[in-house]
Image 1 (cartoon, rainbow, N blue to C red):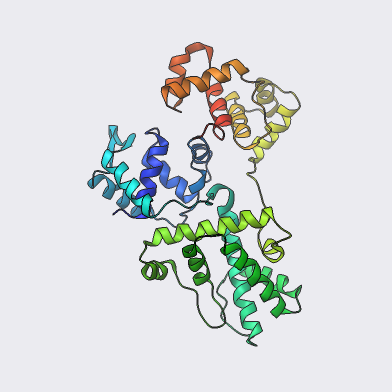
Image 2 (cartoon, rainbow, N blue to C red):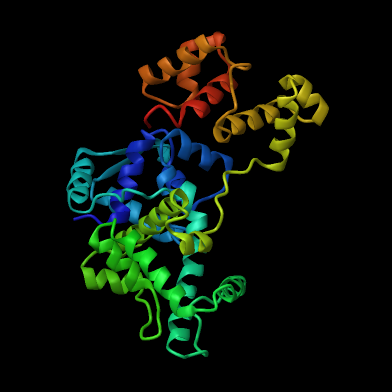
Length: 353
């Protein structure tokens, strides 16, 4: 039986449809904040796993990939430029997911950065309140981040009755965890430290539950992401946890793209914007693709008419590819690479990939 990380790599290779190298998977799992990696997530529907394995070492990742190759689950061709899943690999993935399905609420792109801060705050609040309720004012904080410690001190000062705070927090967490599978609730609670115990590690939980460590890790993240999603949806119901959770922050355009966006909104053409900003036309085009990716209300109609947008999408669907060159070869002179990139960027979140 394969392990979770192996299953995940197989799954991601299938989603990438042989159009990216295996190292692109590593960048997605690590949460590399490059335009290419974020665009790949968007185009191939892999936002779920973005940044979910930030501590993953490249050597270990490459060893895992090599293991998949040795076991004939995947094959790499043309000097590593093409990668595909074998029939054996697809069967192995099916068997694994039948026993350990991918989590339901995980969304690394939306929640992972916030979930790291949220967990640090929440775990320290729980530990601190637990100790204070039991009359212990001196203890070794589970989180050593000074900014987190300072935040928790400020937060706790707003609640004079720590016992009441503890009861409210317990009630909110109980309500949230009760909506998830029992295993996830167990993992989450076991990770928390309190007056009477130190939280378990993923490795300890893996041994205790007879699961692999990466799967425990991903279930824990799924729980964090669910809590952030649900508390944002019903803030009044989860008053305490909503205050602990960092504010929602959408993807921010780079400063250079923001400047270009301001010009485009004011009716500047690509050429005029390039001249005004003393940048290459290709750089302005990159900025516009970034806008299409991350600004929901941004319209690409001024750059690609509707009929051509439809033709590009139909061609991509017919060729079963999101590579630019095959689409360009098919449509030839009627379309530019920029227009293809723009249409794929804008449609990536609604084409089911």
